[in-house]
Image (tube, rainbow, N blue to C red; front, side, top):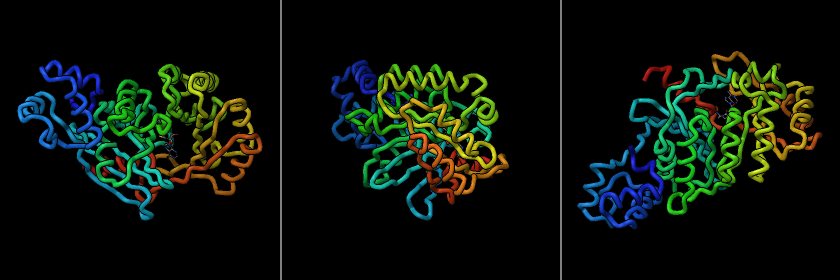
Length: 343
Ligand code: SAH
């Protein structure tokens, strides 16, 4: 167990159990999450004895950076972290306007096998621990002069399939004595796990929910995303409506556009019909090609036509500019590249 994965209240109970005053818990939390120290020796307001006791029972582990790649435009940096068991996870830092956004991974590998996604190709390995999620942000923050303002859970893995660790990491990263990242600046993207969307709604945090839809009907969605066999679109949209009834925020539907598969004008009309009445926004992602999936992104003319139809129906639509394609930053591709190469 790494001390980085503990919430303030847990740290407070821990120091109490060690016979220390409760305020030590706040000191520890702030050293770790606000000053990003790598070891106890840096905690100068703690006695030598306290530091020794804690370093024996509660070691501080730090995720080492295995590789870094910077895109040519320098607006995207990708980090590959090495986990203690030899697994790797990738995390991407993006500069948008004046904001620093970090795209986090939540699992080593992914169990959902969406046909166009690199993360699932090698299957699911394991859930990341809370500290392994938190430390992706700490290690990147340490290297920046500006503060990280936004988090997106869109890296490798399905965040709602590692629910407890992800939610705990969010509470730690949000805490005002730590990085203090606003809940409204956090986006969680899901393949569409219906019961978990409802559970997240009941937490009441104003997190922005993004749902990977990719098709307006079950027959196409099922071919792209095996999860659709379990949760059909109607049921998924019902869970989304529940989320909106609890969390009063516009949500996002992600739609990866694949040439000749889900990009026709009639599907755009169908999508608009399906989303009618939802307070939402559609984010179109032109397919990022990968070897295992022999398709490509539609032409920009087709993408624009798709956008125009959705907007005609009053649905705000954006097209995601894939960043860092030159460094295979998109969608789990670095991790897979390294695994394929053989470490
Ligand atoms: N498990 C979460 C996070 C996945 S990654 C989810 O399914 O939402 C974030 C988004 O990128 C998802 O919408 C995913 O479907 C999409 N994506 C994955 N691989 C892609 C590719 N090769 N091209 C375009 N979008 C892709």
